[in-house]
Structure formats: structure tokens, C-alpha cells
Image (cartoon, helix red, strand yellow):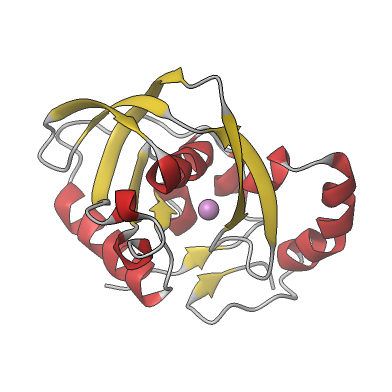
Length: 184
Ligand code: NI
């Protein structure tokens, strides 16, 4: 089932999310719905607050980017209760966008690599390093479950520049090409 994507201005996007319990009802169905929603919106990551659920859960699909970013070739999975254990000292700039902030893309500086811990959709535990664009997608989604969005991380000058666009999204004046929930 395709779910509406919550746009900037919806309070759930600003909440720190709660841990997902092992017996969370119909978790597999929720994850399947999130993948379906992500695919039809043509995105590479979708966090639970973006579909209105304040849960520490996100799905990623970087497979379409594999040509430019080979590290994303098999980067299609769900992350449950993820944690960032370590970050590399070196940073890198990438241009980011977000399904909850249609029409905005800005350069964001973040650590190149992150060491992460998470549970997959079978609640199996994993610990690994992510590098390159898979690391970037993870960090962007991780921000969402902490109640942050990528424009919180751009330079003050750029933030000034996107202020009107953000305000328009929050006021419901911006539409998206996918089903979304916005203020009217
Ligand atoms: Ni996003």
C-alpha cells in the first residue's frame, strides 16, 4: 500500500522517534509499504516519521544509483533501531534532497564513513561500516529519526536562501509528484 509522505511542517518530522519493539504489530507489512512508497516516489530513502510514524525505522534503496556509486549496488534494506557507533574524521560534501522537502537540494557536509549497529527486518543484529553514498543515505535517514532534516545542516547563508521554500512547503503551498500529507 502506498502511504502519503508527510511534508515539512508536519510535527511528526520534528520528534525524536521511539524504539521499535520486537513484537511491533505488522512490522513486516509496514516495511513492505514503506518500500512501495519509496519506490513510487523515486527516492533512495524513507524514514518512518515521513509516513507519520514516530519510530526508529527507515528503509533505503540505492540500487538505482549503482552506476555512479557501486557501493549502493546491494544497498536495499530496512534499518530498525539503528545507531551510529563511530564516524570517520574525514568529511565529504554531497548534494542532498528529501521527499519531505520537495524542490530543495543543497550541499551537506557529513563524515565519509560511519560504523553502525542495527536490526534487520527479521530482528537480526548487524554491525558494519558504511562508506561512500550508502553512508550518506544512512546518515540522512538517521537524521529523520532524531527529528532533524538535512536543511538543519546547511550553511547559514544557504539556509537563508531556502527559507521561503521551506515556509511554502510548511504552509501547504508546495505540491509533490507523489501522494503527500501537507498543511492545507
Ligand atoms: Ni529525507
